[in-house]
Amino acid sequence: MCQWLDRQSVLLRAPAKLNLHLEVLGRRTDGFHDLETVMVKLDLHDTLLLRLGEAANSNIDFRCHYASPFFEVNSSSPPPIPTDSSNLVIKAARLLQTTTNSHRDIQIELTKRIPVQAGLGGGSSDAAATLVGLNELWGLNLSIPELEQLAAQLGSDVPFFINTHTAAICRGRGEQITPISVRGNFPLILAQPKTGLSTPAVFNKWSENYSKSSSRSVKPIQQALTEGKTSTVSRLLFNALQVPAEELNSQLMQLTSLFRKFPVPGTLMTGSGSCCFGICHSFRQAASLSPLLRAARIARVCVTSLHHKRMHHGYHRSSYQTNG
Ligand code: C5P
Image (cartoon, rainbow, N blue to C red; front, side, top):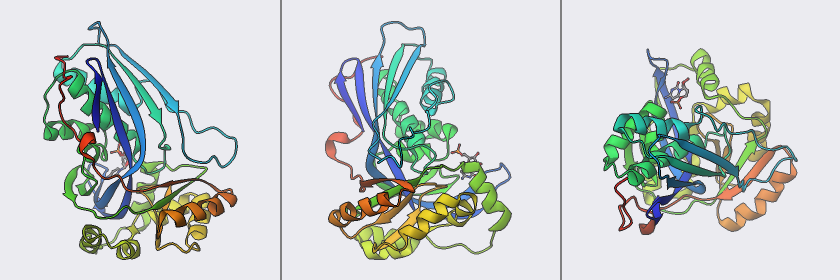
């Protein structure tokens, strides 16, 4: 995840995620919902370049540019990403700055490929990468559990991205993580309708209409992932937020009914939407179906797969380590 380029800079890969199973267990008194969800990391990723400045004025110089692999549905540009303190990357840097009393200036360059308001966890992953990268650059030596604790203050999905495991069951708000093993690549088509969805709006819609007493077990899909049984995983795909999300977004409803007609083993919406995915038999099938989906002109489309940890991407300290 974190690679030193020289003594002043690190490069980080911030992967997107999918929820292959998402059960909402109930609404909590703090306004959040208790979840049981299986999340997997994807090859689709943002990139962050973090560079240490010379001065110690606590300055954060943040820049963001797009390099979207998603085929645009028309010529409209993607929604702008805030570069002020409302961006999770800046929030992560400020949180680490204040909790550890680190003042060295930093420059952050974010290359954005993961679409926003998609349920792909792009903002959360960028925030986690910022914590991991600055822990290295400032020489803070925070442990993974310490970073996960800070991450949970930034958002429910952020702790999942601190570590490098491919998949995990996430419980509580999403911050209690149990890594699980996964075999296989899972060729995937992602399709995002033109309009996104607000996470609180989707959860509220669920609360109004879908509260129930019994829940669907995570065990069968966990076992199928561990054994690399693509067809079983595809059959077990489940997202309790999909129906409420479809009720809020007619384009999503149109997209999911089209997707279900495709000869793929399984399709689902990820997280609180609005991106949907199809698990394909092969990369060849993903490549041949994606132009058909694009031709319907209702979604941006991208082909990807699971991201498996490689040794050189592991979270480790290298000989370029500085003392911040
Ligand atoms: O934690 P995060 O900032 O990503 O959550 C955004 C919103 O999504 C919350 O304010 C809440 O409305 C909803 N949410 C929820 N239960 C969760 C996670 C998110 O209700 N477990």
